Image 1 (cartoon, helix red, strand yellow):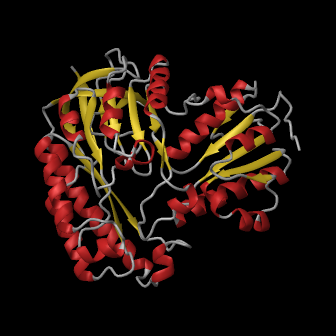
Image 2: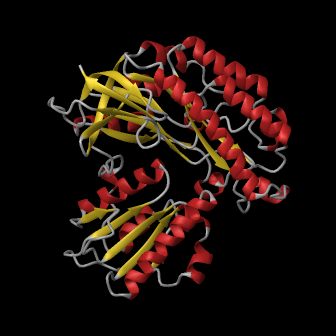
Amino acid sequence: MNHKPNKSHKVNIITLGCAKNLVDSEVLMKQLESNQIEIVQDSDKTDAKTVIINTCGFIEDAKEESIETILQFVRAKEADEIEKLFVIGCLSERYKKELESEIPEVDQYFGVNDLAKIIRFLGAEYKKNLIGERVLITPKHYAYLKISEGCDRKCSFCSIPDIRGKHISRPIEDLVEETKKLAEKGVKEIIFIAQDLTYYGLDLYKDRRLRELISQISDIKGIEWIRLHYAFPTNFPLDILPLIGEKPNICKYIDIPVQHITDKMLNIMRRGISRKETYLLLEKIRKEIPDVALRTTIMVGHPGESEKDFRALKQFISEVQFDRLGVFTYSYEEDTYSYNHYKDSIPEKLKENRKNEILEIQESTSMHLNYNKIGKLFKVIVDGREGEYFTGRTEYDSPEIDNEVIITNTDKEIKPGEFYQVKITDAATYDLFGEVS
């Protein structure tokens, strides 16, 4: 059945969740744009009569945000402010039947692999020749490159394999071609994303090919920074380390989510790595790339985490001194291994207290590391202007989640999307202040 929107109507695409969702929305937007359908994104104030919400369903907070956003636009539909409401993405994939029953006001729910169905449902033509092309939601100077879909890991707390399916690597030649197109549009920074970067190539080539992929992307003219996100620590491809050290346009930055440190908790979480192996890996990375910035993710409050485990985790965080760190409390997710085998026995208040203790340690670490940068010169990409200042990032910082460099001498001609040498003049816990030299 065709539900062809009036061509004069705009489609408003709301994107929630991670950067992988953002890329999915960018691909959808390109398909709609190629069908002469006007699009706006993440707008609460628009005359768009059709709204598509790309949801996240990973943890409880994300699910709540997705539900609240859906209900917000259900109210808009009831008030005749919009005509059609569609929901796509992880939440819709995971809870389609429940959503159809509980929020029937939504016109249609689609899963994570239903791009062609969505396009056709809107009365448009799905164009295979556009594979790899997107309308960038990010500022034009950086873009995310999703190198694979799904995940083959079996972490006890994670629902992603059920939502996104098994790991599927994208061919190297497709990713190179996509990056070339992005570079032609003016993109200078490419951020590799996947559920697990380090698994790349095993399904497609029967061998890990992350090094080969990074190497080929680094040779593309116009790409000045390449950044690596979500590099699983188990079976980490050590052959990428010399490449990162040698290639000037590969950022000395690795996002490696360790989650915990005691053997007991790593086993319960089914991480496939030991405490000793984790320490050795981090030491190896820092030895081969002395100026590397390590980002990690920690989970507290998983069933089985004792006070002894938590103390060991705090000691680990204090010793290693990660440059960047995110911490989450355990979310009791249906159909995961932990949900089926453990009771969510740790009170929410205790989880939050543990989270805050980790954050306090990281605040101290971040302040110390930032103060050590005062007086030094860094290459900075300017992301934009905020009030009286420009904001940018060093190679050690990813957009949205990491530190910013606040540039104070705005009397100089400074353009967003350009690189500048910036001397750091002051520091705060999660920000640097500097002047363009």
